[in-house]
Amino acid sequence: MKTAWKYLDQNYGNPRVVSDTVTSDLERFRVIQPGEDQRFCDLVNLVRRSYNILKEIKRKQDIDNTHVISLIERKMTKDDLRVWARHLNTQKVEPSMQNLLEWMEEEMTARIRSGATIRKNNPPRPAVHAFGTKDRKFGEVKSKKCYVCKEDHYVDECKRFLDMSPVERWKIVKEQRACFSCLKKSKGHTLANCTRKKECGQTETNGSTCKKFHHKLLHVNNIIEESPAHVHFTQDTNGATLLPVVTGIVKGKDGVKSQANVFLDSGAQICMIRNAFAESLALESKPVSVVITKVGGVEEELTTKLYKVPVYNNNNEHKIQVIQAVGIEQISQDSPNGNLSEIAKIFNIPRHELHRNPGPVDLLVGINYPHFHAGETKVMKKLAVRRSPLGWVVFGAGTEGI
Image 1 (tube, helix red, strand yellow):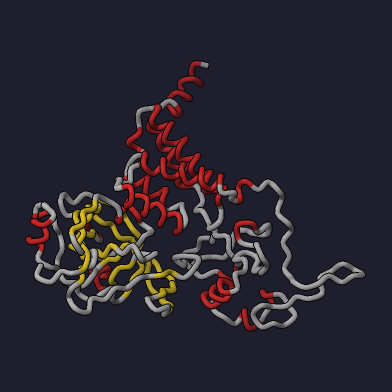
Image 2 (cartoon, one colour; image 1 turned 180 degrees about the vertical axis):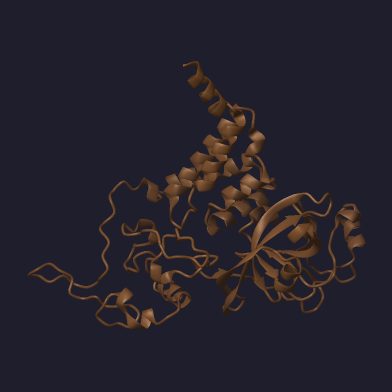
């Protein structure tokens, strides 16, 4: 009996083991899909429980850090990330675990009170794969009209649909507002309430199995998002606009490091890295296919690489995060610097804390890493500065004479 108690105390009485178990639970939590309000509530409860446990054993620092906060952010939908980033900016607060928890609990309460799906206790109606009127004698559906070619068959049997690429099929299903899981199109039916949804199960190029809840005909190997990614490109035409560009440090293979011009673009849903820059550091990568929607609705399908990018700040080379970025030939043209000494005086910031080098943008960080876009902000006329994890970043218009 003493031996058994000793074993239990060694394995479950050790705060470090408890901390590892809590972190593991967060890592195993499946990414929330659009419309899954119940799973958002599950995530809130899991985070609150994990926070309370670690606080109780005096290991709060194991969850209140940028790594775990980023891990939780990656479990949320893009819409949730936008609301979270907007909350940080409007409330002028830092992305701490306490602030994240308070926001998540407010969101959960709002969704419950607004009559979200989690309040509906009625069982969902059985899903079907065909549409039309029922035969009066046998009560069976007679019409199976395909919304792709308008012929009498199921969508997943349509030759025109099958001849399309997975990206083209995504576009059709999205335009028709059909279910991404069963491909059914009917009023009120979505992936969130589909009773036939199941994991894709297709094999990725790296040998793993796709765990996402979409139809196998919509599977694209190692796609970054389940829907086309929207990226906002801003081009300076008159030299009067400062993009939110800040200098950071990226470390590559064998510890080789290089300064990078980092564009903090809150209008982008993915991160991108300049191919030549990534290759010069021999960053770890894998092949991917993505669709990028540029300003004006122009879509471009790319077969490229997904890089792991370790990002550090300039001041003390403190590691901020390893982000995933899609390789692209060019992100943006050279961005003007402005008179940084004058800008530092205007905002009462030490000049050495403004890190901004001339040259092309090497790395674009989108809203899928929202804590890069939050921080103390100062505004003066048409210019603004914000304290990002990489340091002060300056942006705005009307820079003539500065």
